[in-house]
Length: 211
Image (cartoon, rainbow, N blue to C red; front, side, top):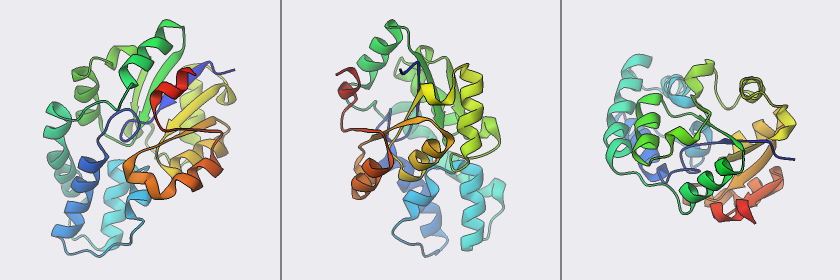
């Protein structure tokens, strides 16, 4: 039985991945850093701090703080004014909330972009918890972040459904013991089969959660 839902943000609740990817890769491009085709799959679950560390390993000649400041600058305006919720997300969240489900967010995005975006869309108050990875001082590549989230939600790990469009995050949440639902996003379309294999459920549209 699903007692609580734990949602990713980028690419799951909101259609932000094109902007997120552009902002992240822009920094590598501006610094002349070469990267592999799976770069988005690697960095999406990391959060800004771990992504900055990874960029330094790749050869970006900036401090961690300088890289993070640049990331936030590139992303902020779009999240504040333009990025939309994905299709049927708002209606489904309201339905789940009305039926007594516990709703929480766990994302690699920082609060500086996360909170204003959810508030603009009118869904911030639907969530019992809105967490950035920064709140746990670790990343979604660490199984313990899901265990700690479950403790804060007040439910057993296995009674929570985690939803994410990223393969690596889905696999890690599954290792932690959560039920996992993969979510389709254009940015991860090349990994649909892999995600389906690794998860308990897969949805192309949020309306499928109510079926």
